[in-house]
Structures are given as structure tokens and as C-alpha cells.
Image (cartoon, rainbow over all chains, first blue to last red; front, side, top):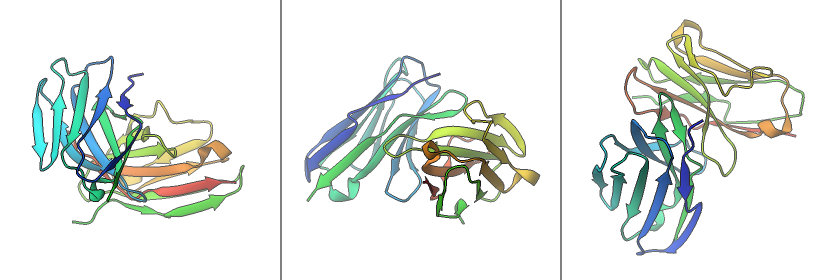
Length: 108
Length: 113
């Protein structure tokens, strides 16, 4: 069973701070996705990374895929209360396998 | 474009009772997934369909869980009999065949008492 480990599990910060969430595995991903989930809703796809070393930016969010395609990070610049939610990484090994998630709370 | 529809949104049952969840995927999406999400954890894949055939059900507790996707469109997930540890949100998702992006429904929150 391929495992995806996310860290930290919980993150509580003030508005305007920067943060990084990590996703690691001992297995090589064919691709990796980041999702955001709000309470009472299903996860919503933010980005898919496919190539080792790839960096993608989505407004204040920067996603990086490790060179060996075993790890990924999500960096948020100048966090806002609207960024609050559960951030999930998911690796594709034929089926989509999720990490346990990082619960982010951004305080005004 | 309509999203993935799930019903009911909430369900409370006693242990040993049975329950069924329904999912209507996005029109044209050949791939359908059922995930179980326990509070504080990421979603765990229970079963994946490609049209009306099962692609992966390796993590489906087959002694109590069953799922079907007749005609390759709507799907139902059933639990019989339910246990306390089945309390979770059950998410349905769909995607176009061969496409990575999965679209999720709002989920059904099941509480077993």
C-alpha cells in the first residue's frame, strides 16, 4: 500500500503569514494533485503536477514537485482567512490515494 | 454544468441497520469513485468503476459493503449491517475516462449510533 504523509497535520497562523505544507512518500508518483476541502463540501482540485522538479503557481499558492517525484510542497504567501480549510495531497498510482490532510486555520 | 449529486446529505442509523447512498455523476464521466472520509483523515478509496465495471475494490469491506453502477451512470453504495466505525462522510467523485481531475460531490455524512 502506497502511503502519503502530510505535515504538519494542523497549522494555525495569523493573516499575512507565509506557510508551507509538505507531502512525502517512499514511492514514486506518476502524478500528484493538491486539493482543498471546506467543511461540508467535497475536495476541489487545485493543481496537478506531473514532471519532476515542476513548479506551478496559482495566485498566492506555489506548488512544487520533487525531482524524484516522491515529494511535493504547497507554499502559501500572505495567507488570508479565506485560505482556511483542509489541504489534501493525492498521488496517482493507478488509483488516486490521498494523504491524511493538513488543517489550516488563518486568523484575521 | 451540473456537478456530482449525492443523497442523502445526512443519515443517522443504529448499528446493525442497513443504509444506502446514491450518486449521480457528471454527465459523460465514465469513471466513478466512492471514498470514505473519517473525521480528521483524508478520503480512502472504497471502489472505482469504469462505466459499469469495477476497476478497483481492494479496500471495500465486502462482508458488509456493496456497490453497483447499473447502466454505467448512477451508483449506489450500501452498508449492511452498519457498525459504529462506519461513521464517516461518504464521497462520490467522477472523472472523464483517462483524465486525472476528479470532481467530488458534497458527500453523505453517516452517523452510526
